[in-house]
Image (cartoon, rainbow, N blue to C red; front, side, top):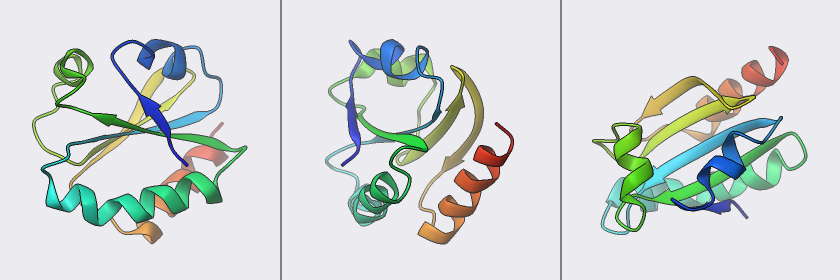
Length: 108
């Protein structure tokens, strides 16, 4: 299961983490977010021990969403060693996200 990210734990989960982190910004009212939820759950399982996958609800955590200028959901931000290294806005297939995660892991 993905890690639940919040305004309170975001810095600890992202900036203190040495592994690759995928932070998924979503909302309960977002249809495309619901479509991607099973993919995100599968990625969390597939990359367990290699990358952390986390979800942040923008309505319940407005500070972090505003800090990163999130205007569309889903938005996926990829961090390595606390640094933003890539992003995807909108729906993406499991294949695309898997390839992106593998490429980012190879650069570590």
